[in-house]
Length: 423
Ligand SMILES: [Zn+2]
Image (cartoon, rainbow, N blue to C red):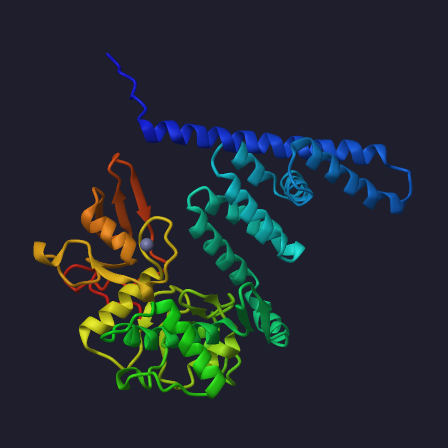
């Protein structure tokens, strides 16, 4: 006799979450219908009236729903975008296949794109939203947009960089915030350097300040005096390392060399770990020999790794780099912690005869590392997947986290078809 599966507690939560998505879609549809109806009544009352009517609709909705006018305005904008520009996203929400949060991110990010690019991006965005958690979706969509816009990335960056500035934001209790608006790659390098220095200081005997406090003191000292005398010898000369991935083709193009005859497709933009695509000009400069940059060159068509830099050959360091480069982030579901700030975890633990190898290592942030080692989750790397990690929850649910990039799998002549790898 067939016995239907009994829903567990997680199923019951999921059910309400799905219903909320379905209802959110209906609310968007009705908000848009309401706005259309009230706008139609104002037709013929002159162009200047339209703005007043829009404001009136916003106030009406805010008063009726007892929310702020700002919230009502957001709702109206989102509803209009979903009903008019992104119907597939609305369908997905109405079918409970993505959450309201996904929809908000989708509309905000895709609306900011040039109109002619929106349709193609929106189609891929819906597919992404239906599989990824909110954080991974936001990053994935930003990446997708940046790749689509790559052709104009250099010009847009050149325009944006003119707006660099420093400002002071007055706070309460005699405090404030110093704001440095500057190219993001350099900002990550600055943050990485003071963090590395601060860690050495914070671990000194008798040090009572927190890491955050030491970091702030260091930054202030360096900016006020141009130097700091509270850095122990061990932390002197620390330089930040930023991992930049540059498709080989990008470097060749515009370099006075002939373009590759089959290289008709535009190359992917250079990418900095944890930051995203950067302008090609910046990447060229970074690859010019400055030792603090780790250069990862990728094959122009396959995107797989050709080199992780020439300076180190010792397996542990090189392996660690390859493992973190492949994942880019903590490999727990939905986690956004950059890989460079994670532990490299052995899926099969060292004491259980786990190997130190690409097939057994992945970065996990401290919190997820603790959970994996001490919680009831079962975590393993899926064999032959190129680094995908499977998480089995205590309620027996399965989540798969894909790595950001692929690493080539070299087959021996005996196991493969006898031909050498394609490069
Ligand atoms: Zn994590």
